[in-house]
Length: 358
Image 1 (cartoon, one colour):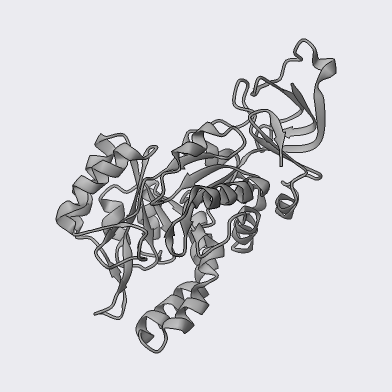
Image 2 (image 1 turned 90 degrees about the vertical axis):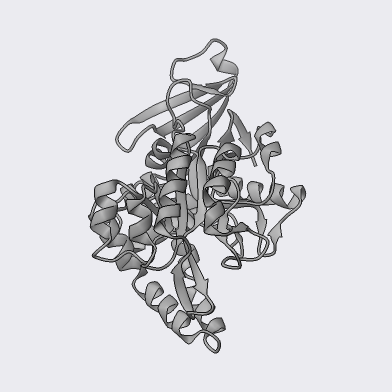
């Protein structure tokens, strides 16, 4: 039995004095035997959400279980207790049996166009096979499918869309028929309108949003996960490709330079924005606090940026927060994170399934 005492942030404005974790579940009623409970004190939030993370993946492709475990533990120590794994070639189902590791919502393996993505990451296919592969990953995942919507076209020397409109429409319809939502990696402008009009549910990165497509996203309720800590790498990527692909390099710098304006304009238009770090691949795990701070830097109000990794993110993913009877997954801090999101960088206690871990 565990008692959390201080300020429990059940919601942005729903603050309670304490909660109890009994057999791994939350209750707000004092249970029998409460005097023997372990007590932790501070400001409690629902376990943070990283809505774009890759457990089981590094810059070369799939990793072994020991490496995947280290990745998950690093996220946990940062306070991330719910991960939407936005594409991984590794089988990480064994994590579901570990009560000391974050809970994962999987999108299966990336689906990319042939030779149009990072080697060893994705199913690389042609458009005629897209519906079949989307159906396969919809059945393997946890309610999500991940497409690679654009990537560098070496013949064009720049980012271009990967899929024809008709195939995308059929594939998204099939995913929805199977009860899965669809998201897509998109850096550039070109693919966005087709994907949104085809019924996509979310866009990752979304650096290519413009004044023409932002209203469409808002009208359709399509969410974005900006991954600003990843977008920060664009200048280095551009420098590395300058000699061979100067047009692509210039485009990447433009997307980087306007990144904050893009996110702020999306938020101002009413587009749902959620926290994701793109951990895995070339990025370190455990960056969730940094991504929240980046959203604030972009102009999103601190409370909304906090919700994008806490209450709002959990609602979007269909997972409970600190409600009565929910799994006791929470993070405790020394100060109020609503007043200063930088507090997120220093968790005091991490509670997973009612146990203090880490």
